[in-house]
Length: 399
Image (cartoon, rainbow, N blue to C red):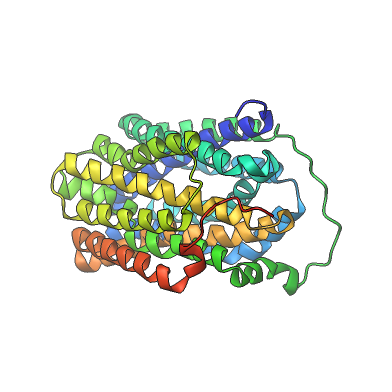
């Protein structure tokens, strides 16, 4: 992305923040499972991160559309520095507990309610429209590289204690905040308008009335909600595949390894035709890979299945995010991105809760297998429910 300095600062900031977040999730998950040994509590961490995003969605979207998006992200980084510092201190002093981990999960969820829509709606302001799909793929390359490195580094550093991981996260969030505060773009403050229920709900109405956007956003919700197994990886690492923290780090990194490889390819060869068919095919492949992972008792096979799942998910992510940003006018992007963030949060954090709850009922293997089957059914259903999305050809349409 030569010649786009502001976008590159954003790229580096996102890389640092994503690395920190991935390390943080490894540490919190392993520490929670060590404290309680409960699949339910692992799922509860995800639920409590999702709940604030749902509660704050309308306010967050309005704020992102009205203020400088780079500064909003910088403030979110500062808040996460404070959270990780508290976790490090609590671990060192010996008063880290289940309640503390759940409480900080709520705080992290509230921060991400503002961070995610700001991050999603910023790239269209930093690059020309024609370059946006390639820029989003390039941004995903950095994020996936961080997701590959973050869990592996986090698992290694955890050998020195959870406090060491939390301290490293605090340093990375600090670096991310310093980078993003320097992002410059043409920001025209919005005309001051009264905050009404109508302005808050504008993003919801826009999504409801745009079948392509609604289909793309909801596809992520239902497919990943059912197919996600991230919350159960500590159980698979310890009780199914019989590996330790290092194995957990590799399992968490495996989907990102596949996603990284695909994001590099999409940066070089972006999807230009049959976008809808490619999107739904990728979701179906994600479901198949999830099934294989759930049934596997081999560490090697499990890693390969997660790599394939990550690659398929990356194709889906780039297409869906491109469609949402390209089909939304800038004055609505914050509110639409906030709605999108809730769906993403539901598919990730609420998906972790669903995985934990069904694992407590069916066991970890039964939970993941059921999710894989559900994902395949969703891909088939969306062909009929959203034909405009399924038949979408080019991402960037002539105006």
